[in-house]
Length: 167
Image (cartoon, rainbow, N blue to C red; front, side, top):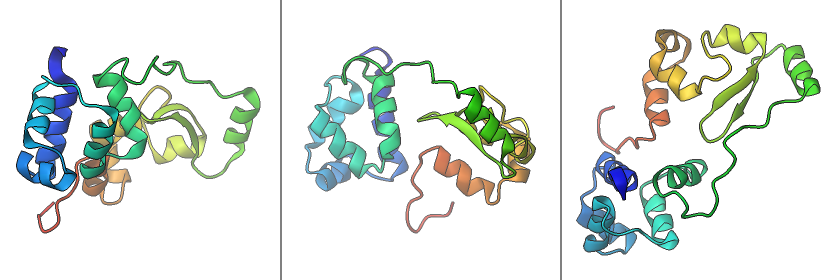
């Protein structure tokens, strides 16, 4: 597979969890050889194997389909539409009427589609077309606006924090 995005992703998740191939194989009841072949891109995993790997590598369920569509196109059938549904005028009116920060966004990328004034004030620079993770990691104001920015940034990077290790 060109670029081996999926194998690279699985390897990185395994390493971030401080697991060797042998440890992951034992934990997931898979062979070390299978994990090695998946990481090297010489074998495409079955959906059952993917579920097992995702479960043992703590991949959030909401990201699983997106990861598979990006790295193993066609595995789950035709891709989901890439154009998000735009909010109706009534939805935008309700959004604007809210005093608390609110927005419409798409999953799994958390791309902002529309935001009210309170949201724009709380998250400066997080405008339509921007993803929340992109804003969190690249906008210097995010460090000032988000309580415990370091922990939140780590969570958005989908990197598990190993027990007993400093963050």
